[in-house]
Length: 496
Ligand code: HEM
Image 1 (cartoon, rainbow, N blue to C red):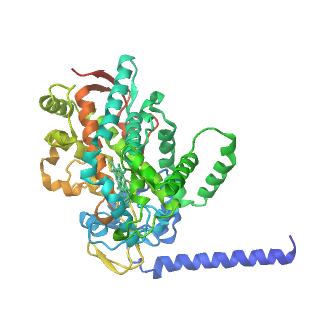
Image 2 (cartoon, rainbow, N blue to C red):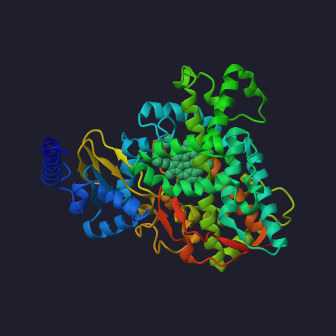
Image 3 (cartoon, rainbow, N blue to C red):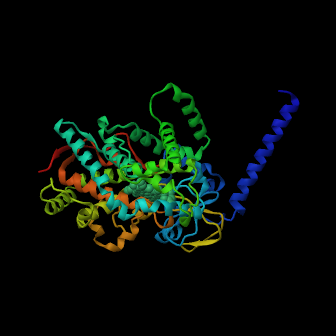
């Protein structure tokens, strides 16, 4: 290197160091959030949050619990971000009437910017929700209940086969296979067949298992996405193994066919999301058909949103029911009394009327949390959240665990106690589906799945925990909770 080049390099490094030091001083003393409590390192740099999210492998939520104990109900967790811990704050941030929008730092970096989950513009988000809502309405779910019931029958049959063979079953994968098969059929009229894969180890179930643990890495180091796409493009021609890209390509080909021959939409076994997305609906704000890129992203989104979440809820619920004999006995007794002959049909609407089953499901949602990472929202103009005046431009959030473990409403929050739900006032504190204008769009479908899976599994199968302890249910806080490698295993035999 020549002397001139060295001088330039030294000068640029010096300028960068000076700029960085000035920025830290600004953030610590002059930034609009400087008056909020929290660790100085968090106020100085985004790397603090990244450290806990990525290097501590989904450890941010545990750290936030510690920080709230130290600093109170609001903590500055990054130069421009606040995290809250109070019931009032949750309602101020997320419920109806909020004007806050999704934070691009988080949602844009998922690299799916044109789907219901990630639209940041409120109008675009509302339009897409209005378009998709009919397929996820209670009416549609009841009309397509057979799709769900069919997968649940396969789940029960295939799980029982392990009992006949005298082998334990990986229930976490069995449940996630069921949820994936439901979403594939319900949204795309496609028989995916994950439930028929040996050991419930379908490649897509395994891929999601890996992908959910990696979401926070991708959000923090978003350039990695392009590396992954590049690797996929180079390796795909030499491999016959299916990937996300192959599903994308297959769907893209289907969209082309539908565009050329819209009558194909009438020849599916039942309506799918394409019936709603592939036609103009000006009255709902969709004057023209969205781009294929956007429709493909939506397809990926519902596929991801519907599998892991339902699977986690039934896994966690099953573990706690089996660990608490009094809960299991009460649930089985209720199901037997209402459904003496298990070979007769039992519908979603009949199961919904069972009070103990309903309380078990609510407790399972509370202890599995839905999306566990605090979902960040941007405050555009100065706003008051739980009595704190928050300057416009700030990113605010509150994770679902902070509601679900609040001792104010849930005494002994780490205990699995379905009876607590006899108090219907508590229903407002189930936030597994989030709340307000961006709450889960698929929650009617999710409730139907939860009733049918819990109802049929516990009426028809006698399960015992196999080599699974409370320790295996400890989760890391990635986007959804992710559990250890051992996973929930049970031994099974048929109930009479
Ligand atoms: C127990 C099951 C489920 C839970 C706990 C759950 C939870 C959630 C949560 C917490 C959100 C908000 C995420 C955020 O604010 O970033 C969400 C959004 C969403 N969920 Fe679910 N979900 C479940 C099942 C499903 C199913 C079965 C589907 C559809 C097949 C679905 C589709 C969606 C969609 C499309 C969104 C985006 C909504 C928007 O941003 O406007 N979910 N879900």
